[in-house]
Image 1 (cartoon, rainbow, N blue to C red):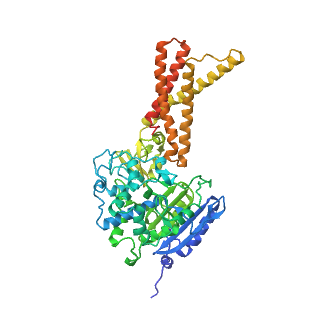
Image 2 (cartoon, one colour):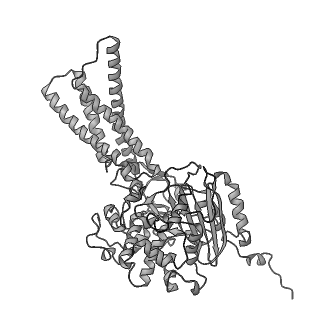
Image 3 (cartoon, rainbow, N blue to C red):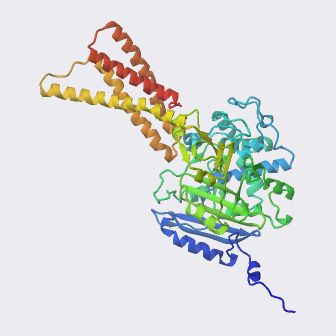
Length: 576
């Protein structure tokens, strides 16, 4: 009897990527993809792992465009937030040893009275730190980064000094937190008796033969790695050089690792051991299996969200992944533990998308989340990852996004009850909360008095300059001063205040250090003091002296403008 074999049977036996690209053609596929986007690329390093073996390890483009320095497989990139996986792995190693428990209140592991700004009595666990749902507000970019090694502090001291406010109840909101991950690393330090970077060197890097990577806050334990990191520059998506792209991370375990893509791939391979003889990170495979198992689902669904800090992402196959973005650098790892196939992509471009998303989708297949949204309209939403008690409070409040019903349907998750949307997940790392149209309009309306005060300050100064010019032309000397000097001074300082706020706003995308902005914030506070002084002097002068109606109006208007500016500064925390 003849047996008919389907035409695709042989094809199914060919080893391939999740998107059905034969592994034998993977390198060719990547080469072709990179070539098609060459003019948009600075440098990119790509490593693919299958069954513990490296099947692709290539670097493309220029590490330093200005000096035409080519990238190669020894080029050092920034791991950025992929560094967090070292924290989660360290925690699970100590869990395996019985030194930590994922569900125990972390206050039991920390010095007494460690927290000063907790709002809720609910316990915070290591699981909360892995899920980014302990409830903390975010730090400003100025608090997350610094540029001088001299500013480096011991991890525990840094965490105490930079403790954020707790603004959400634990377990209720996912809001990406570098502080929380840094805290988990500090707990590793306390339980192991070693600085975190030493612990990682001994218990992760050494067993995996990782020699070209450092997680030291400034890289001092690997001078050669630092030297090679200084040979690569960071760029924008448009290939514009980003000055001072070597930054240090305040909570360094959350993003300070620098190293080669090949080293990162060694870590990736250790997460997918072929058999127990390749089990290098844990004593028992059950611990690894637990770490890579779902620990948090999207609210109200059976859709996996986190696996003990690893992000769960559905491409053509279920995968685990983590991303990293730093000043001038983007990195990503994605892997399928089932087929033991994974990839590392590292670039020297900020918020890069061509490889970060495009190449990954080409190899793993596209990902798509479809939600059934019963609400007939979209709405305004605001990220839960924001600083609410710092000078960026204003900019966070203005960062409100409107989503249509169709856009909501394509998000990771939408939580709604009776047609009312309560929460959305725009990314796995961050929830967004709805903002009423009334609040949006109130924010806009609240800016009107500020805008009018700005117009008045400019008008007052221009008016006086015109008056002075007319006096000169008519040879009448200078216009009378008296209280005008105070009135003009407060308006002049108001204009300078506006320029100062613009400087702060324009510097934020460049990751300024907090110390470099301190003088700007001090000026804002100085303005409040001057405004109070002007108002006090104005009341005294109006009580003691007589002025024309026009003068009174101008002086009082200046006082009102000064009060509005001062209230604006204090109300939006523009001085801290």
